[in-house]
Length: 164
Image (cartoon, rainbow, N blue to C red; front, side):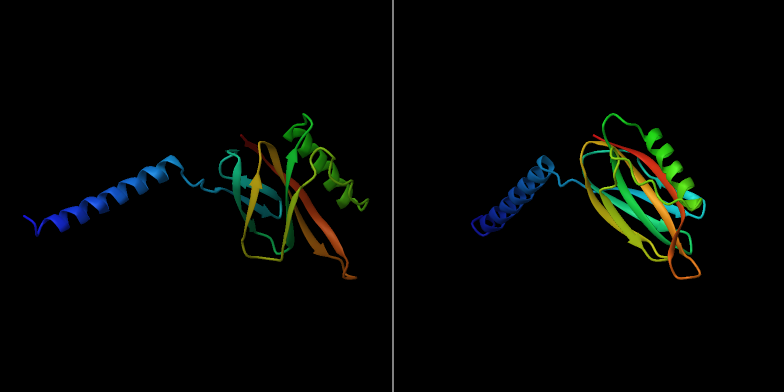
């Protein structure tokens, strides 16, 4: 019986360590990043994945399905404005740029706070922290004029994301 006591004690200690570890991790789970996909094509920008998220880390899988350089901005929509108003603003900005009149710029109530630019091809994974609110993505494609200067090929909105 005395020879089994150390084995029994070691087994109980191991069980206690495992049980304590499980209860502690269950009580304080590590928040998992939430993920969405933003895909840019020649005709626009599309959000895939959940549209209602929790405050925390947002992983954005940015996919460029064009042969152009692209950019992506994440904008909080503030001041009681709506995603529909953001879409209208982006549509007006796109029309202005494509007509050669230049950008009207982002509205002061939805200025993108985070940007990424990506060269042609290949996916890019981004990680942003998000607080409570409504968010939208602004997406754009860029080309090059014959003289080497840049030119806007398109600008779109994708969203909305509701973060609680």
